Structures are given as structure tokens and as C-alpha cells.
Length: 107
Image (tube, rainbow, N blue to C red; front, side, top):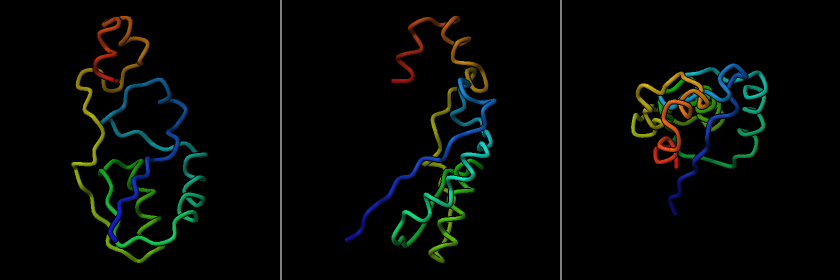
């Protein structure tokens, strides 16, 4: 049987919390980096590993692929949503500008 395991990247750096960063590539926090070992240890086996191409996803994917000795590939179809002009802006500023209209984009 073939299955798919989806794993979201670990915690991003504190400076980017509350910031819209769909395609905007932000770094992991130190705590996020330290969680990589725990995530990798929790996995039994995988035949292949793909990531979105974002650095925050790639670092985890590299560790997983290394553990299992499998091919690692970037797949743009896994990329997070592109929020356009909102990228890199605070959610509070976006909400102040757009009001509840932003909720249609994020839900």
C-alpha cells in the first residue's frame, strides 16, 4: 500500500510571527530547528521525500531524506499560498486595511 505523509515545517523565527508569509521564505526559529530531530525520529520509513522549495521546509525534508537514504525533490505544487501584496506584512496591518474581507482569503 502506498501512502502520503504530510508534515508542515517547524516553528518559524519569532520576528515572523504575526506576519503573512505564504511564499515569503522565512527562517525557522532555534526551537523549530531543534524540533527537526524529534520529527525525524518519529518516522518509521519513507520511500521518497518532497518539499515546497522554501528553506523552512527544505531543511526538514533534507533531514528526513538523509535518515532514510531516499531521493529528495522540490515540488512547487507543495508551495504555500501566494498572498501577493500581503506577503511580509503583519496580519494586524492587513486587517486594518481590508477589515473582514481578509477572512475570505485565509479560511
